[in-house]
Amino acid sequence: MCGIVGVVGNPNATDILLQGLEKLEYRGYDSAGIYVSNGAESGRLVKANGRIADLEAKVSGQLAGFAGIGHTRWATHGKPSELNAHPHQSESGRLVMVHNGVIENYAEIRATYLENHHFQGQTDTEIAVHLVGHFVEAESLSVLEAFKKALNIIEGSYAFALMDTENPEVLYVAKNKSPLLIGLGDGYNLVGSDAMAMIRETSDFKEIHDKELVIVEKDQVTIMDYAGNTVERDSYTAELDLSDIGKGTYPYYMLKEIDEQPTVMRKLISTYADADGQMQVDPAIVQAVQEADRLYIIAAGTSYNAGFASKKMLEELTERPVELGIASEWGYEMPLLSQKPLFIFLTQSGETADSRQVLVKANEMGIPSLTVTNVPGSTLSREATYTLLLHAGPEIAVASTKAYTAQIAALAFLAKAVGEANGNAKAEAFDLVHELSLVAQSIEASLSEKDLVDSKVRKLLGTTRNAFYIGRGQDYYVAMEASLKLKEISYIQCEGFAAGELKHGTISLIEDGVPVIALLSANEKVAAHTRGNIAEVQARGAHVLTIVEEGVAHEDDDIVVNQVHPYLSSIAMVIPTQLIAYFATLHRGLDVDKPRNLAKSVTVE
Ligand code: M6R
Image (cartoon, rainbow, N blue to C red; front, side, top):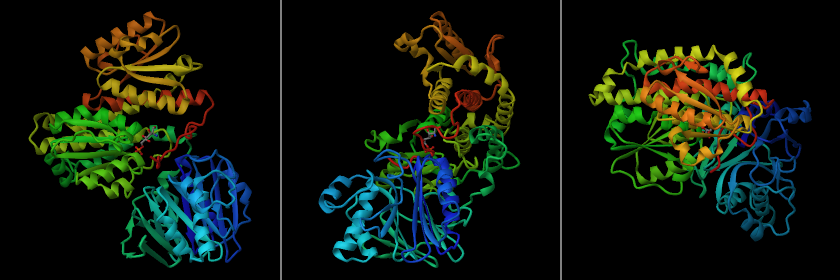
């Protein structure tokens, strides 16, 4: 989704902005722009529809300055175009602004304050910068006072970075609901919607809370509320490693991240267990689960699917019921909650706006919360009571792979630690360190079969427009994730279905040649029933591909997965489905890492 980067006080401002925007590319965008200045009224604005490379070509080394702001846009109001790309300017051109988020009352603002203004495009951002400009020009307010006044009028989600072309020594920034951070450089300062955009320059950051305005100068950062009261805040150091961000020799990040999964499993073992196999999970988190009477997992997309895949394990080991919530639904309406709920936010990025709106409500209601995330220092991590990190390394491809498997594995450590603390026999018998090592080996074995998967996919999904994943129990949850992965990057319409539910309606869609991928993990009874469903769809002409754990495999099965502990079977079973999505997309000549219309970090509700 949209990204912001800004810098003040560094003569390499153009490079810092362009490199920062490149680091934000993974979030998804359709156009980009920068404004760079070398002194009062010397600034230049360059925008391009398309990729950062197109913007760089337009800049072509001819833009020098010590301050500037840059933006990658993911269209919300107005189609992707150069005119709608940020930065936007006020009516006179004096103010320049970039914005992430959605301004809800933009039409009202336009009608009330900006009747005679001329707009270049259709964005809500242009309304915002015109509003600030209106207060500077029509009411002779200082830029700071005008910005403050505008912020008290604007409703919705936003992260703003604003520059005054007459005084480029200052960046004015503010946020509400959308992420924004200050980066502290040596003799200069930065602003960014994601630490990743600034990580080449600094690892020291200052967070900004909702409805705070910050004046960023090269040697000073002043945080205040909208009434103008100054707020003191310490900086923190983010544990991000720039070396993990490269693609290396891989053609796509997704393939690299799929291949990294055995390493991630081992990293989790070394993080959450000691040399003797004893759990090393923060005792405060274990206690929070013990004190809860019900666990509520709130998440979106792949993280939601990982929540389902972990439900049974969590319930059996912690002896607490687990309820799943789609974050975008719970933001509007919470179900009836138990007496002592614990909210668990599963989120790779830690920035998903849908999840965050539920966390804000939970905090208002005094409900304790745990964020399970891959990004230390992310908004959901900072604002939750506790954080459990995934240690999967940066996930850049839009299609989430290693975060899904890391989420299940991290929750396994939590479930076992709680179970052991409660004297739960199943938890004590579950040798997680050993079992997760076997999972890492199973993943490696599946990854060594890429050519097989490639050829099966070519045959099964080469020209199809739709497909089904089916499974029962744990395999149904994997089917949900597998179908999401296939559709989001290959654009094949795909449903993940509970195999037994097909006959209640959906089987009418099965006809000659429809691809059905069946998932059978090593539960004999369940697998036997799924075999029955396979026969039903085959009888109606479906082309079936089977992914089967070895304990229940038949000779003619297509892909056989090394068997692992049932609590962890979703991790082993999902690997071939990730490869299926990857190869189906590759065969169609599509960009595996950057599917259309999607963003890595979904920061609007
Ligand atoms: O960062 P989060 O885990 O909160 O993101 C939630 C979803 O947007 C995300 O999992 C999405 O579904 C994936 N990109 C799909 O591969």
